[in-house]
Length: 354
Image 1 (spheres, rainbow, N blue to C red):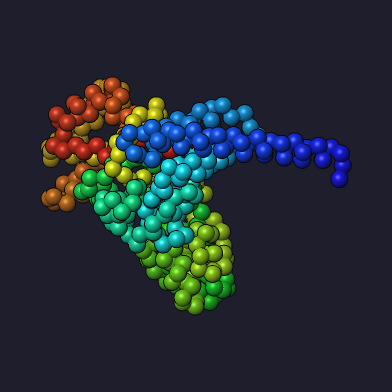
Image 2 (spheres, one colour; image 1 turned 30 degrees about the horizontal axis):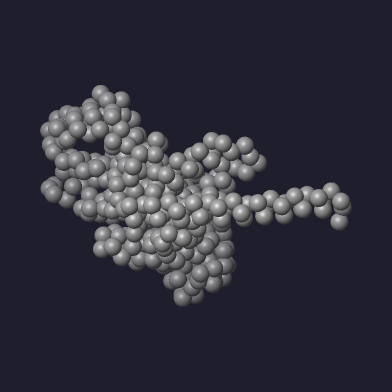
């Protein structure tokens, strides 16, 4: 071993010792803060968002900002767990992209609860069985997840956060010979995200929808001559081979997930507000809905229509806007909007995903 290499490793050992001391000091301070909290809430989404934003702004490398976010999300996760375990429901089973999104948002020091359906995730949070839930809401290729939107409209839960996860689909199977694959299982959204690849490479195989990609992997593990489209993490869970990677048609394929809870999140300084609204069935009604946002200088980030289920050809509109509902111009726009809309429901204000 060269003297230079030895010196560098000794420096790393010294820094590791210092890091360990500092991390434990941080954990001790987090414990003290936990004792001082009067409402008993373990998670403060706005505070965590501010911490991550400050660290990214001061990061001089060589670590990327993504790496910094990942590292400190885990640090905060472990510190949070010293107060009390954080319980999080997600659309399962284990190995789904929704589980990956939950881990990305909360870190590994959580008690995860796998749920069979999106309805079950909502129910677990509503009944207090868990503190938070994570559900998919839209995909960049296939659009909105209708069931999530319907339950947001019907239920009482607040949107407390979001997580954006790049989706890289893989073909998983017991045997990778494409000629032997007669059936492909996957969630309908994933089948849609990979239809170009399937048309070119497995046009002969039947495409069977599954409740989730992990469920598809389970079916592929139980049925010879079948395959699943799922994330690579599902292969290890079900003893399958990763036959092909990155088979999604869009290389920028991304799914947005929402964090559901019962708390109102304070402003972080970089927030968005989600709401749902409806208008009278008359000419210019939709224009009237959007006019208050324009007048008060509030930027709209998303507009999604959905059947209202209250009458034929009646619709509700899901909207994401920049800012927190307590911000001056947002509050003014919402107040005016409630005067012109037949229905307005604020789903929550929360930090923009990092």
